[in-house]
Length: 447
Figure (spheres, rainbow, N blue to C red):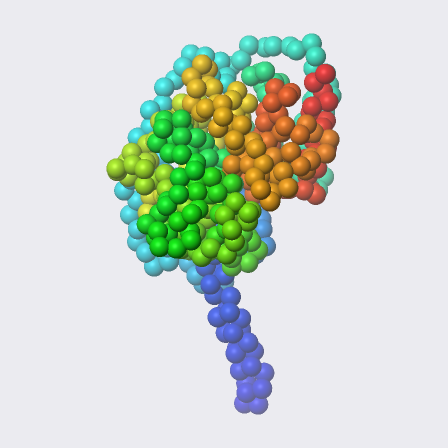
């Protein structure tokens, strides 16, 4: 027995301890993702734990986490193999905030929103639209295109689409939701939130508070080459700053989202490894750095919190939207925007109408053009925090398409030449979901 313990059990114990030690930081990210996801889906989207774990958290190795919901406290705690407990807490108006490990952070801030209900039909209000039949639309083809975007009941879930909304000439011409979702369900846009952050910058630019050619953006950069980085470079993801955007490893982005209490500082402290405007590199850290820059434009934290809603989000009636913060009260402009599919579509309409919302010019037309103009090194795929089809990513779709894109296939497609906005929310990207074929089918229904 002693020999068995010595030569079998002890080596196995050493191996197990080694594995845990080696993966311990990663476990922190796993349980952080799980707690944050369950918290937001429960208290912000009103969904049940079973659907969350079978959908949003059905990712290797996130599905190993054990999640416990405290409805009285409005919090979620997650562990993996009984280790690395992480906690996310919900606060009305802010959403869910992932609390740093061993930290009893109190969230004592929230935006003051000015929501005005209008007696207008969608999109300028939330009253039902009048039935409008367009003679140039083949509704059978359109309905089939939308139907094909979803999995057939009883078959394997391959496409995993949750919502589709198609708008033509301001009218919803097609709309469909998966089981458990509706027009009132908030859905996480992930990196579509980056486009919201860009729009907030656009509002500031129209108000004369910023200029995209500004340099010397942060005191921390004044004494080195980073002082030459412009807002234009940051908006184009072309700053030359070091950043690794890999969601499958412990990279800059996963550590920022699930370990940091101040997400605006991570990219700020990175060194310059490329030449600005010649080093395109997609970075969620850059967007949160911009969120920090926006905060610096205001005298108080409250003004910063209010501005995003009062000057943009609620002005276009995206009243369901919540942009969650980190524990320091910075909007996580890279990733944490929640809204209904219809409200995401409203954002697309703002850009389709060149920054004009029901007669009020919130963004300059030139800002919308700027947002949809390719940046250096992106092969026609990226503008100012918007994705583009200028390089033909979708070969069977008009080249003037530009879009808000998010993890797992969240999209708001804007096609000015066709007067169309298309929203697709789900859990799959290419190749599981063929976006080129989907868009082509929808467009073909409009003669």
